[in-house]
Amino acid sequence: MAEKVIINYKGKEYDLPIITGSEDEKAIDISSLRKDTGLVTLDRGFKNTGSVTSNITFLNGEEGILRYRGYPIEDLAEKSTFLEVSYLLIYGNLPNEIELSKFTNDISSHTLVHEDVKSILDGFPSKSHPMGVLSSLVSSLTAFYPKSLDPNRSKEEINGTIIRALAKLPTLAAWSYKNRMRQPVVYPDNSLNYCENFIRMMFSLPTVGYEVNPVVAKALDKLLILHADHEQNCSTSTVRMVGSSHASLYTSVSSGIAALWGPLHGGANQAVIEMLENIRESGGDIGIFIDKAKDKNDPFRLMGFGHRVYKSFDPRATIIKKAADDVLSQLGINDPVLEIAMKLEKVALNDDYFISRGLYPNVDFYSGIIYRAIGVPKDMFTVMFALGRLPGWISQWKEMRENHDPIGRPRQIYTGPTLRTYTDINNR
Ligand code: ACO
Image 1 (tube, rainbow, N blue to C red):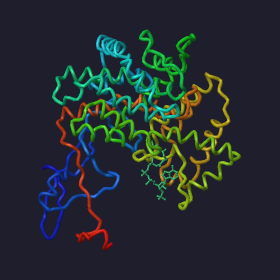
Image 2: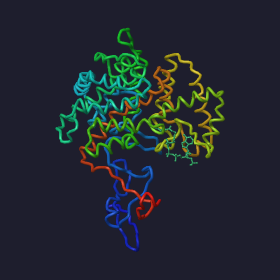
Image 3: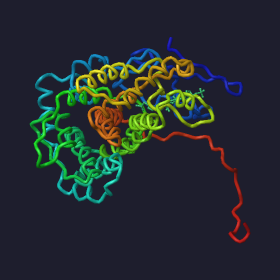
């Protein structure tokens, strides 16, 4: 017999079906609740609300499991490449050699952006945060590719938009940094792979020779794989929500970038290094900051600790911690801020406040450390996250459209004033 939940409201019983996922996750389907009973559900921050059914990413926060399309993140991080993982997320299966080669070539042949993008870039003040610039530039792609606005395009045309998004984001990301530095932009070099090309566009100057360090390129590729998707997080839900109104992929991704920017989401990696620098500048006493984080009257939190869904450990953090150790030793980095990070991690992992609340270092704690070690400036950290998350956003947007999901429109419980009588301004 099909499983169901029975609710009793005002003396009457209502059956609500149970939906079971392929990993035996269960949900109460409440879609008929309001029609039958007049009730809505209230769940601030959607902490216990499934907004979609999805075939893309499986995550079990209690057991620390993360899989893209069924493949464990540990295997993908160790054995595959970011473009292979992007293909997997977007099209559902690992590519064979011919498929991967075509995908890679398609991306390589679209890395250039329209010359007019440079005029838009020039309009931004040099101190602009690169995330704001990136979000605007991605949205501006609708102006260069107006057909992307048509929600009824063919599958092939939509695929063209997907390829362009993947191909152009590294160029736009590197250029948003060049704007901040007031340096001339560097054009893509399509003989390089995805990460090498981005690193060169970001760190080199047009007239000076530049060799991409393979240790840095490999570390970045791994970081991008670890960030590639994370089911219905804040930015991905934003991408799906915006896309649910049939807005274009570029606009939806631009909104995802904006959502990712905040310090409680992707901006945490920047906040981690700022916090570590702050600890160092104020004398390096970790205990003071641990006490501040534990004090209910102090808004301070240990950035890079805690996660909405992982309450035992973040599997990405385990992989990235090892990658951070490798990068630091291979590059021979000796950085006092990174020493503070290691001490802080040790103290917090042994403190009952953090243990009892399931607060462990998350992926952003270590990604900030790697970015700092490979010379990425702080306000570019979240941009790197956006580069990694792009295939996830694309696959979720594509799935939403292919499933014909309805426009996202939550309900609310109104708590404001009841009916009031308008009074003329002279009588208030
Ligand atoms: N430092 C100190 N205390 C914390 C922290 C922290 N970083 N995170 C949570 N807590 C405490 C809360 O005060 C609360 O304590 P209480 O039960 O005594 O009231 C308890 O742990 C639960 O915290 P919530 O805020 O309810 O947890 P939630 O799941 O809503 O938040 C979040 C998760 C936003 C990630 C939070 O842990 C946080 O702010 N962390 C720091 C920012 C960060 O690193 N963000 C990156 C997330 S990963 C990502 O986006 C890729």
